[in-house]
Image (cartoon, rainbow, N blue to C red):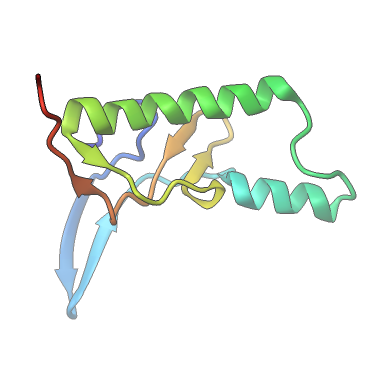
Length: 107
């Protein structure tokens, strides 16, 4: 399900001591929520550059489109805390553990 440039990859998963562990890459810049909070702490009210906001939204929507159209999955928890950036500026949608299968009627 995570074979898209804007979806956090899952390398493997396993159960250990009754817990499910999922091995994923380190997304080193954090979530959009973290970045917005950091900006506020630096006396800068959030992300002001509209090009950055548009890029984050575009890449997030591409990831959602992949989940919805290619995999019949609905994310169900879209928020700034589930959109991640790495130090390369790549944008990833994560935490789709509450996703649900959907069936699109083809009429």
